[in-house]
Length: 315
Image 1 (cartoon, rainbow, N blue to C red):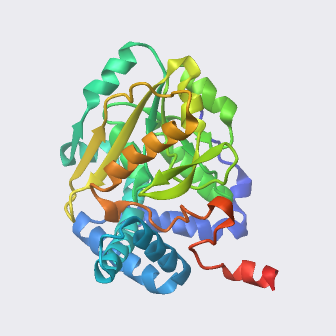
Image 2: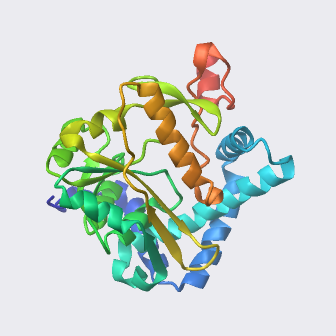
């Protein structure tokens, strides 16, 4: 895939703040890890106080998904998830502006043999993963052994979209907008490895209700439909940082056998269970601020607070 070309319009004054942000990320990527970790943790702690709606959404999700924890433990997990997300901002900067080779001795891979076996069959491969705090860095580290296509949500800011796409294409074969189903199908038919994250709530269009951490969640059925293309193999991926060290683990599971079936609810339940099992390995590094349970069954009330802009419209 050809990287997007630079155009003079990207230098318009309205984009200067975005360019300043890109420059700041580049500078942060040059810092030693110990300082990056402290800055990231501080950024997460600051966000905890400055973004109350995200904080409340995180607390709600953790209370729903970890009822076995007492209130103090739930609060500690929520705070830690903000801290991990702050560190993830610095890790994203590293993914964009550091060479992947920097991480070769800092990461351990498990399950590469499963991926190699499926590649030898000449089939498309669908890697299903969750939204962790440093998704971009996970893809950069994966490129040490294989290249993938990624499905992503395009940025509204033209500069951020330009920079993000160009930096990602150092590690990816294709970057596929999440609404471009035709390109996604083309990638699988061409026997590409496609990285897909099915753990967010996009409503009930092409979705069914399936349990996620024991809570009915609107779960997209797209992975099952994609798996039927070129009999693509479906595998799960998981990556996490070992505590506060600059050491990472990357896991690829064996192919999910008998998937898809003729039961979309059973398929969605199975994938949600697999993702949940992997998330529990390092729960604080998962993106808990997303409103995963906003779509409700039978008109039951939302567990989340109504956003201010919607309050005004309702009034």
